[in-house]
Image 1 (cartoon, one colour):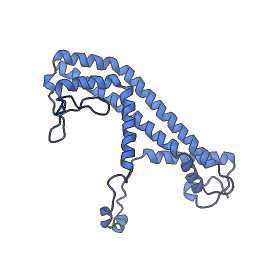
Image 2: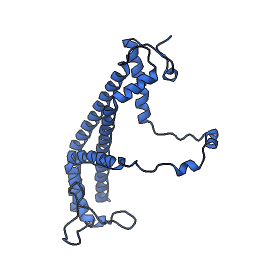
Image 3: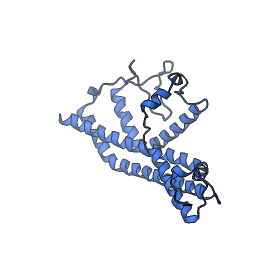
Image 4: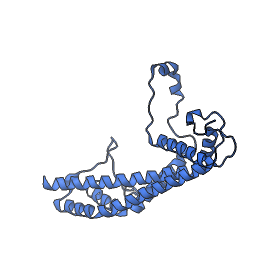
Length: 240
């Protein structure tokens, strides 16, 4: 019996030697990694639509399970905290700019400015949910100052974003190693599906860490892009 069967043939028992197990683990991990990166595709095959009852939509969850919401919020705030601590000067520039064009929310009793969990001011919003702001308040001198600070900061921000990307790649590498270890460890005649499930269980913590670091890296990348766009808009407004 061939030990190099595809994952689609994993329902039968197979016995793998060391090198075969490593090769099989690499293929399975590669497929799992691609699944995580690919967007979810919607299957609209007519036969499948006839099998689906519209009553199922009434039972579809649209929120996190009880207890999950607080945990997800905590993880999200941790990721945001890393970005705020990594790019404090970028957030300082943005809040100085917003202070000129927006109106801060003030405590009705004390008159103090209301701040978010990171200590930055919270701003008045319109009924639509958009911020109340007026960029015509910015003078040419203020625009030039912000543009210079953004331009000089970009080099450092890009390097920090690159380090975040490196951390994400290293975390992904650790997850793949853990997955491979869990996949290869079973001995004897074990199906590929069983090996895959053991690998997933063994590497679960490393996988979540890799996802977390990937999210931080994506946020860092998007922040740098946003600052680049802001700098370009400021430049355009000065030359208009």
